[in-house]
Length: 124
Image (cartoon, rainbow, N blue to C red):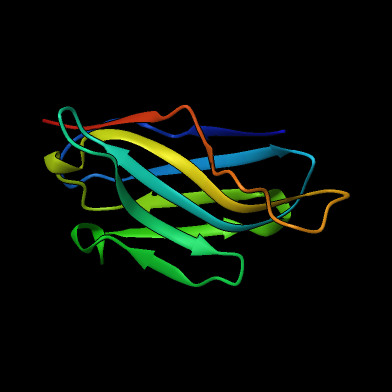
């Protein structure tokens, strides 16, 4: 019922910037929480940043001051602006949604939804 499509990943030099986008599609009335996670080779998936429909944000300590999450509720799209990138930011980045309300229903879906992931590589 809900599909998430990420874009914007790629190869960038240390100190550079990238902007990730994730668009949610389907019969969506609203989405409470949208977030970005990442998974590096051999490591567990970790939360990078998240944002509620009201604009409240949270960030991993490792990205505070460098990354900024934002969203366009009308477009069901979340963005991640990544500045001053470091080699340790290299990972597959995944979009996640929680609290999706489908059109015609009144309660949030019980399941989270995930995108397919987009690779971010920071290397000289």
